Length: 114
Length: 116
Image (cartoon, rainbow over all chains, first blue to last red; front, side, top):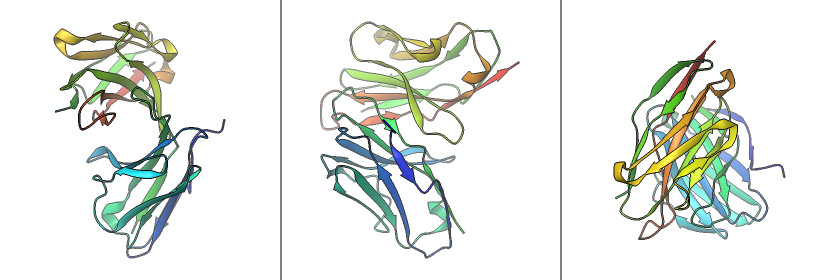
C-alpha cells in the first residue's frame, strides 16, 4: 500500500493566483481530512469528509478556500485567490472512519505564496 | 470541552537516557488518546493509541504511554533514547460521544532533541 499520496510536494506561487492541492487517500479508508500546519498556529483541521461527503468544514478559514472529494480515491483543496498568509504545510490524512481509528498522513504540500 | 496540553515545547536528552514527554488532556467524555511522531518534512505517524483497554500502552520503536484518569495524563516514555528519535511529538485526544464525536484535538507538539 502506497499510503496517502499528496501532490505537489512544494508549491511556490504569487499572491492572487489559484492554488490546487491534491490528495489520493488509502483505498478502503472512507474518512479524509485536510490539515494546515504553521509555526504560529500548529496543526489545524480545515475540513473532513466521510464517504466523500463533507462533514465538518468549520475550520476552513474563509471563502477563498474550498475542498472537494468527487470520489473515494481523490480530493482537492483549492485556494483562490491565494495570499501570503496562506503559506503553510498542508496535510491530507485518511482513516477508516471508526471512533478509534488512527490517521494516516501524507507527506504534505509546502505552499509558499509570495 | 476537549483539549490537549503538552507541557513542554522542547525536550533535550542524551542518547541512551530515558525520554519523558508530558501530556494532559481535558475531555467531557471517555477519550481515546494517541501519540504521533513527525520527522522533518514528513507527515505524522502513529506511535500508539489508548482506547479504554489496558492503561499501559506499548507502541512502535520502544515507546509506551500510561493512561492515568485521576491525573488526566497520558505521558509518553522510552527507557533509552536513540538519535533517530529526534522529531516532533504530538499528543491527540478523540471524543467517543457527544456533538464532537470522533473529532481529534491535537496538542501543540513537543520537539525532542537527542544529543550524542
